[in-house]
Amino acid sequence: MSRSPSNSLLTALLFLLVPNLCLASVHEINAKSATCKLVWSGSSGMLTDTASGSLVKYDVSYLTYSPGPKSVSNDLIWLLARNGTQFEILWCYMNGTGKKFDAWVYSYATNKLVEQSFKGSYTFEPWKSAPVPKLDTIDLTKTPTYTGHTFTFNGITSTGGTLRGIQLNSSDGSQIKLPDLTVAPLHSVDVGEQNGWSADSWHELHMLADRSTTPYYMIAYSNTPNGYAINLDTGKVSIAEFGTKVVFQGDTSDSDDDSSTSSDNPGIEMEASKPSFPLYSPLTLNFTASSSTYDSWNNTQLKVEFTDPNGRDLDVNGFWDGDKNWIVRITPMETGSWEWKSVSSDPSMDVKTGSFRC
Image (cartoon, rainbow, N blue to C red; front, top):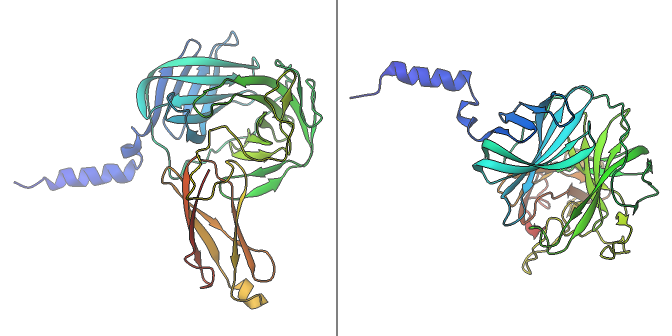
């Protein structure tokens, strides 16, 4: 007895008309906390929050993913919730699928970072190619008052200041140099010892930069001169090269040596058989072409195919650096073992392979 042709046709039509139907269970959240309700389908969603005393609704977009702290969660999911004049950021600790999860929720309306326990249902599987948020610009008019420990950081005080010459590095290898940024510190965060990423503690300074033009939510650390920058207009997350660590008053664990780019958050496992590189810092691969002539440079293609610790593939194009020199640059954003292979029209740079750990 054979399958009915009409059933096969119906299945095919459903797949064509609803291409995300088979993915519906891979990325979704439907859960509530004491003040929030979060419904998210993987491509869009809605957050409602009553923490400010009134019901506020936000559109939800996916920001990025990183491995969660050991013994706490497998995944740390970053979500951005926005409307025209306010935003919230959620850091959700998840384990693939479940009925409850914890999250840290920052609210611009209240300028508070609060831990919340969500109950309901969720399913999340790391993307090989995550959706790119399509966002309108956001108009932030309020200047929050800093709540946190006394600190020293790049001339910034608790009332604000200017960050100069910050470079942003994205996971796709792109880099931009930001103009001077007007910064308003928001709050500080203390991360204790044995936190699942590292045996050591660290401290964080969260800031809002250039709220009247292109707003960034920035995070600086006490144990590395690099941090995060979230573009609140586009939802793009980058690694920010601040050039110095933030130092909090009375904290004796912070080193005065700002020359190191290594970081203990998340914890970095070393493996003697592979080179190790700092997480969140630019990594440069150098290649030598067979010729340095203009025609050779103009007709040469080079890219490197990276595979991250989660098995996701990322292609990064190379660029000419003068003479016979070519460069491919990437900023690793995942802890663990990375593999790479070059693909080039020049045999001298083709099928080169390597591996490293972060």
